[in-house]
Image 1 (cartoon, helix red, strand yellow):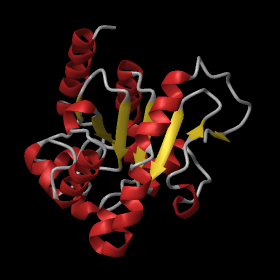
Image 2: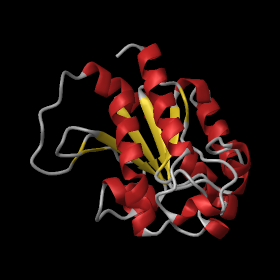
Image 3: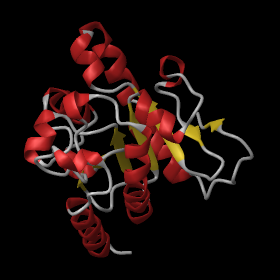
Length: 205
């Protein structure tokens, strides 16, 4: 698909999300938050779910955690226009609670369609909930900053959620250090020919 075709396909999914009433999260939402950014991005960031600011604006990561995410992007010379940002669920869970399994399952097809359209070279999971959805069994404390090639060939980089730095400023440097690895990881992926499918999850670097 061309970038224009990808943008059109993502807009069609966003419209379906806007009209979705398959789980109870739609009952209290102000706006759906399908995702935003470059439809032809090499890197797709995936968080857990929208918060209050995201629900009000219909855009992902626009609150305090989003501002820190912007800072981390700037630290490697990128902007939000260079990447695509989405969440596992597309409506705000009440009180910012964790999404329930049924809610995640309801939204899962939307996210999978977005991944298939964008076809990113690297998927960066933000926080343990997003990571565990794609890479079950890993612990964020040991997995963060370590890229993983899944058995289907997709490559993931688990990172702490940006909000963690807001509650524990001492972790800010760890966030920035992990983020600084992204360009080198992407360069390695780009320079490597089609990776052979692995029988199990393996560390890429």
